[in-house]
Length: 434
Image: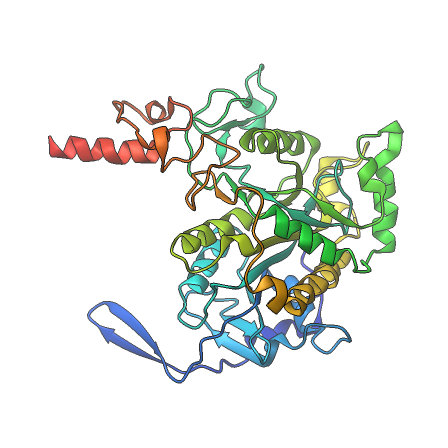
């Protein structure tokens, strides 16, 4: 999540605390807690909207009765154990066809909430489409304020070693070095599994097509601010000067809210490195890889369909300043004017996506849209061979990993693509048997 100092955006913010319609009994035996739901129908949403913080959610609630909207998401308010204390409920239309939740910001909150959702007995998510709809920072090389980006890849760019900027080795281009590597441009020697996720390109293109019918919002401040990105004869930021539109490029995940061309370019390179050159970093947010990791685990257990995920981010601010502006001013003081239209464009672009799925449910979307590309994580957890990373670690030669002697942390990472955690686990197990 990226946003300017939090605004009191919409009057409906307090509506997220509507009373739950479910009753539950807690039976405490020893130290185990069991939650029993009485007289609760299982909801089978066709679409589930995933918001990350209040303004992204409120834009749906406050447009409940706007002409052409999807309807009132506060018709059903369902308390779900494991959700954020700030956002304890899922919200659904009266008929249950569309639901929405708010994860809370950052990776930990996102993973925790989505894990709670997918394991809740209150929902059947096996045929549900998920719309991850939030704001993000934008790379001015590829887009502009208030753009709506649909992504195929989500890349966890900050999962790296880091040197303080004042102590970067003289021959390094950045202080970020992939885990298990020895230089910024080397592929990670240690793979955690959350570095890259790939969702359906076919569904992404359908969603982008639906969204292209939307009349996107803009602001006078954003128009004035984006014009500066060609100051001093700079041409690499031409995309930043255009009016808001629908774009297709990829999302970087980092809990750290960064600003500046050097970090932006470093994460551009990380995106290319982690995706074998096919990813294009244009959006930066805090949650998507965490959300997708929770979903990949659920998909492995057949709780949801990973081919039914849409990543949609709208641009609230530039990740780096225009020529002549300091990174300090870009992050803290400049009125970029992108926050409000970015929030509004979640609703404006997301509505035709949801309505397109609902309208063609029986004829197309109920049975699913077969992806033409690989979908899943860097491990190949769901099957198939990733078109990035070291390949499927659960089949073939990659699955036959010998335990090497573990002398220190880095010794676990020597072989490209090796799973350090697995080596350590097996090595420790072998040591305990001796």
